[in-house]
Length: 127
Image (cartoon, rainbow, N blue to C red):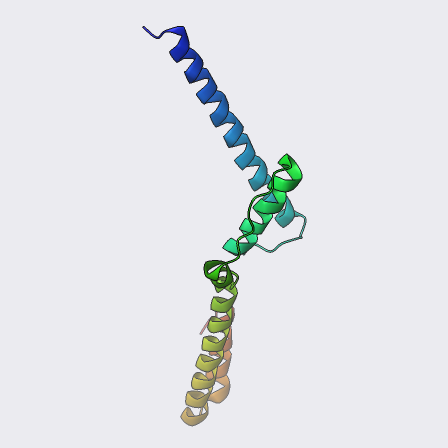
């Protein structure tokens, strides 16, 4: 049998968890709203998310939390997604150059270039 004291603790715990869940949901809603309105792209860094949380907590709850500013913060400012996209663009350009070189030396340059361009664009071709 649960006594009144234990039941009260369970109710408080449930209320605290609901408050915490609402706070997290609200914060995620701010980020989602910023994305949907075009204020941010879909690739925030960890540093971006932290700064958003600092501003959100200050604005919403009037509480100052520390700004993240150490070596890890500096590293996290690099958006690895964008670096990955640039690396892929370079790789595709190198592949295109390589295939063009093969096409020029094979004697059927236009056909190979057309096929490569279609492949890189994801277009289907009928042969």
